[in-house]
Length: 324
Image (spheres, rainbow, N blue to C red):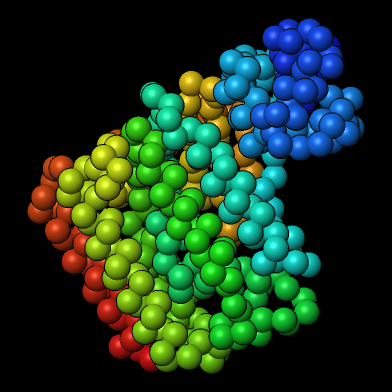
């Protein structure tokens, strides 16, 4: 039997809710804030609904995205790409961050939401609120992939203020998830510092910029230590922080909500693929949670291990300027 795509399944689910095509189109115009022709192109299957649009539709019409995706055969899984275009990296980057903000904003008032994150690098939900850290991760990716050499040094890359604001908003929105679980590879800060050292050694980052990166890393570490000590974000929502005693290959995320579940896999530095496929979600969630058996819970417990961990990370960060 041919696999029914997510887009087709979503359209079918909407038609089950609202059988009248004209009324359905008008409803979509109202909730998605797009034009009539754009709606009809989606309903005709010419243009797929985005993940954010699917989340909004599911919430407003009471559609379960899990059940919708469940119409597929078990031999196939659907993935969406969240990739930044190397031709216009800043514009594409802004679009991706804006989409993330919209997605997490749609979860803000929902109960029983959960986010699980297993990170082998400093994750976006940590560094995006810090100007130089987010700029460095973007610069590293552009330096590797941009063939035009538009941004040949760290100083050449300018992140507009409105994008910085979007980055901070994204971090804030993720902290409204009711329960968050972080499982961190114990090398995440060491990896970041090593990356910075490379660009120091090839003379693409100035001394004062290194100092700014170091300062932001110290602030990030302080925030994380505060959250881990209290077991809560400033939003009041619960946080569990684990430090893994084994290394893992990538950064994995799952998000569980009443309107659907998502699995995300970080790849190509700052890009990602994600899926609402139930089998992919369950496998990803089970893998993340299985890492607990190799990890130490340092939030609201293991005080000595927590202090030792953060002291060690501060030593690693301090070493950044000792070698410049």
